[in-house]
Length: 202
Image (cartoon, rainbow, N blue to C red; front, side):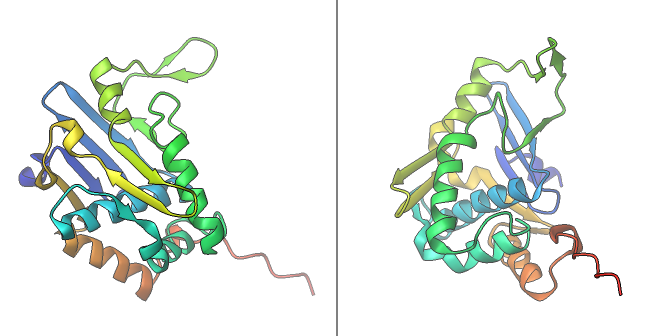
């Protein structure tokens, strides 16, 4: 566990948390706590896993991973949206581009372990400029809604690809990703499923 704590970026697919710890006093723990949010953390993990396979920080074309994205959408994502490629890919593009980098409003995660401030207009968090810059620069997209290429931009944070790790149960990196995907294929966990409709009265 101590070894894992050394990583600058840790994606925990057991708890659906993303931890960022950088030298410039950036320390964020983000909780992806709903089906839609869990889906987008899983997309981040997919992109990171593909970059680690290629051993470089580079753009990952999502069209090559539609089967995995469909599985994620229908399990951890609770089928929150259509799994059809013509709908799923544009939805990921829009959220990645517009919603995911929005640290202050946090539409796709909850910031945990920080003091909340409420000025009467709603919850707010006070972030340092370093935290805001690190989060805003973490994501990059290219292409269009039809041809989406995404990067998890480790190099902009001053971290190497090896400074990031994917964790699932007691496994790390590619083993963790493969075990996570296998668990979804073999026996989808009840936490990822929406409640079945109540039977009609006789």
